[in-house]
Amino acid sequence: AILVKVIIPNEHPAPLVIDTTKKHMVKRNKMVHRFPTFLITTIVALQCFTALGFQQVAPIAGRTLALPSVHPRPGQGSISNIGTSKHHRKSRSRLSAATASAEENSKVPFPLLLWRFTRPHTIIGSALAIPALHVLAAPSYASAFTARSLTSMIFAMIPALLMNLYITGLNQVTDVEIDKINKPNLPIAAGDLSLRDGVVTVVVSLILSLLMGVSHPVLGSQGLNVALWFSGILGTLYSLEPFRLKRFPFLAAFCIVSVRGAVINAGFFAHAKAAAFGQSTTVIDCLVGDRRCLLSSLYFAIFGVVIALMKDVPDVKGDALSNVRTFSVRLGQRRVFGLMCRLLSGTFFAVGASFLRGSLLARQSAPLLIGRAVVGLSSVMAGVSVQKEAAPVDAEDPREVYNFYMHLWKLFYLSYLVLPFAR
Image (cartoon, rainbow, N blue to C red):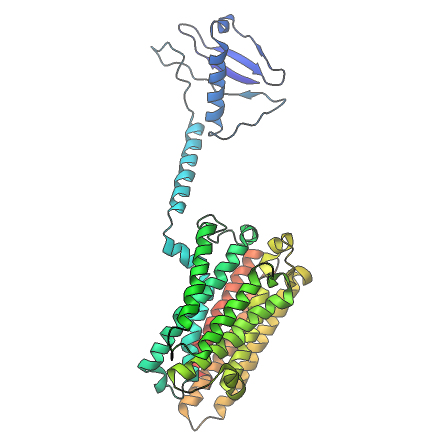
């Protein structure tokens, strides 16, 4: 029942009980009959919507809901002044604040949305890889910073970042429903970027990337085009139906490992050799004939395995609902998390020990000794960091695992920063 006080001129307020369960009214005062039924109904409706902050009113059976009445101010004799209480004003204030927030989000500048759409942690990794591989491929440190070398870096970086945008964007376009569960802050899942704009961005990025790869007879090297085309093909197979290899753990890991390992490292290493330093070579020649290219590709392939499997650990809920059978869904979050931590820390310690030993054998060359020592010490510190950061993490807590996953990306950046010293 809803209790309403109806204010009558020159009379005391007369309470009226409306029983919603029996759907009839009980008179408390005969004066009520002087007012039309539609007026009482209007007053009740207004009070209900005001009390609930204009939310949808659901029927409540078997309960009595009393709405506060307001006495008329002195000198006023009309059916008015059914005032708004402090609670009602707060409800309207919260509604106004939520509306203002929604309007603000809808006006997010497109460049900011595009930056979020790129998955910045991945695009930063690609941006660091290209100059690092140019310096690693250079015959000497002096030749790595010539005008020709810098031109080659910039020319390769633009289509590479566009391809990175295509791959990460395509994954978001095809995973909207999964992202609403696993990553609700992504632009499309959050409703900040429309699906149509996402598709247009992805298609334009792919076209521009591939066109740039073949737009110059010298700078558009075989290594650059291998990196772009293989990344695009594997990224498409990973996300797009009817292939959607991300549903199959081994194939999904293969795609990520291939791109982060051989495709990027060997491709841009070969590009640097040809475009920046004038050596006619291919990707296969670099992998087979240059130990620096082979070992760096192997190292980042292992790191790619860790990234590929670790990124799925916090996404188990959405992946399981969407029938994406990742290793974390199949084997369990704790097991995958533990295995990847041991694999990465073991790799760091092995690389660190190898370069520290190599620094002792390079006493006659100060630059070589210092460079190897930097790589060795950095690797050992990174291994210790993995173990330290992983220790308190609950593998079944998505937030904790995601924060640790982002820490791994920082170590990924560190690896490219010290890569030029790995000689």
